Image (spheres, one colour):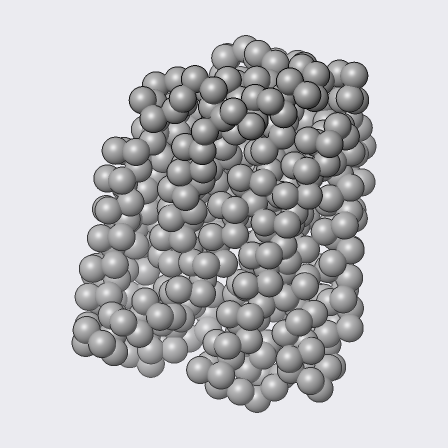
Length: 434
């Protein structure tokens, strides 16, 4: 799309934006809250691992099986949840997803065996697979293309807020309130119950909301009209545009999973610090990643608003984001821990900037009623990539005596390969013919 292709003159579009209200940003705040709760529930088991291993006698292989159960369910759950959200809409579909993952989270408190924990993680994984399809579908309903990546960037930044808040949540529950780990899992399940109630009460489509002004509705809906049909799986997997997104997720999601599951161990072993000291570097790195998430969404949205094509804006932002990951090449072997923190934080910022724009592609290329299914396909591929990365990381670390150089080098290349694949499969990010 060029400046001449815009559905309305730039001046008229800017006038719509200036007159529009701000209620759509309340939806972003709601999705931000939901993402935070989602990641607290996801991360809690990892921080409780040392205590649970001592109490329940887990081996590293036992814990690995529990993690793999979640990743497997999360990957395949995307296929069902994406379809469900397209079928019933984000209000009903996401409420179901929240309910499922809340049951899975609370079920950890009743588990004693490895099989029971694996079962709880499977339920959690299936439910949490509905999160990002709901986020992107809701964003496509509430934001025009010119703002969508910026909105998704804010929501995506909550993933790291959830990770950061997990440790204080555990401290409050276990140290201040005196709960054991079982009570902590059960009672923090109330976060999900509260979230489901708030979501059901607040969320609706823009046209059905009494809080949206006519001016804001005109801004939200000023993109060219589209069909409302839902695309079937057979038709979806034949679309190059769907695979452009899915391949991007397959290549880059594993980097995030790697950082989420391996960074505490890396800092503990490399710099000989305990987990209490590791917490501060982790917070610093994830805060940097938040900056990247928001900045990546802002940059591509700003470029579109200034008249650049969606194709140029998304891809140039992705290339810049990938460049931010290159410093990972110099991390392994660094003696200065805080320099390593900065370089890894910069890489995480690059990943989140890339991820924000990648998540904006399905609504760029598909009608709203197909977005959930496309996100589901991409999430499935990302989960498969994450399982491959987890297994490969263990093998490489065992073979090299804990040397991360090869792993970090791979991480620096996948973003550029992903942009190339996206460009080959969808050279102009054109709308798919459905």
